[in-house]
Image (cartoon, rainbow, N blue to C red; front, side, top):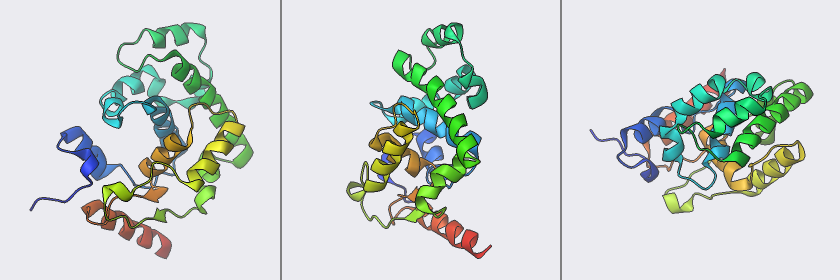
Amino acid sequence: MTKTRCLWCGEDPLYMDYHDKEWGVPVYEDSLLFEFLLLETFQAGLSWITILRKRENFRKAFDQFDYAKIAAYDEDKFNELVSDKGIVRNKLKIRGAISNARAFISLQKEFGSFSDYIWGFVHKQPIENQFTTHEQIPSNTILSDKISKDLKKHGFKFVGSTVVYAFMQATGMVNDHVTTCFRHHEISDQHVNQKKK
């Protein structure tokens, strides 16, 4: 039986696998939250599939997304990244990734974890949307505006409201699978089971 999916993942096996296994699943580990944040900031102005295809290159180039190591990058490492053809070689975004790692660590110290900070905006509960068509899904919301503003206040770069909302969707802060998608109900059920624990 063919599964009904969100239209955006198309027929690309890599995209379909990401849609089926990762997108919209709540992420609470700081290391994985940082990975998504770094990738989303590089995605700004590009398609997500472009970033997804380069994900393993990014992982290798950025020390397995280890924010402590990234925060300590020097000019030599910056130049090495700029010349790495496997990633998006945008100098401002690379600088942004390094400064974001530093801001990330600063937030951890202030809030105990980045997870506590970011999930605090939704009271630690994923937002269950009930969109029936892809067109209904927003690119940003009042909440993503608020988070974007706060992240910028804490020194983060490339975290506009649209990037933040994409991050919220990817890390399961919102369930934006359309209601006809098989993953919508699976993720909703996971939320219900989590509440029962």
